[in-house]
Image (cartoon, rainbow, N blue to C red):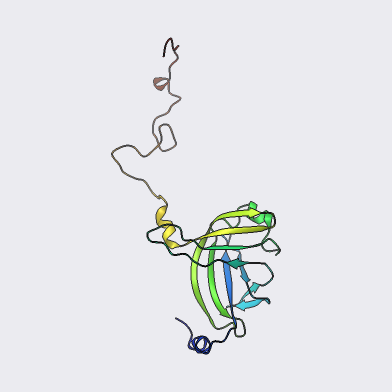
Length: 176
């Protein structure tokens, strides 16, 4: 729901909008970033400007395919470092996108919620894929029951111990 005061500004064509991202890492750390030229306080969280963070437009797809949305930026902020990315601290982090009136940050709407997917780095820049809620349905969880066994022969779910003498033997191949 769009707050009525924000809707009035949108109807009037007021151009004081920016995007803010709230990133929640799996270790519980919450970080805020904005594409505005000054920091924006969104619901008590300081969304830092100057981190070079920006988002792409969203490409909708039918079915459960990963959407075409990305967030990119430069590793120019202390809170967003190469070491943290390399250590996997942002893997599967939750990310929320907000449209915010920077002149009155209490007026905002949540645009989307996603999980950070594949992160590509090039020098001091990065691009991270955003995966929507439907992406979770593409991941296998639990066990599958099929006509054939879903475990790999000898793996941790298989009850066959391949080191057992019943499953080992020595021989010589004499012809092919």
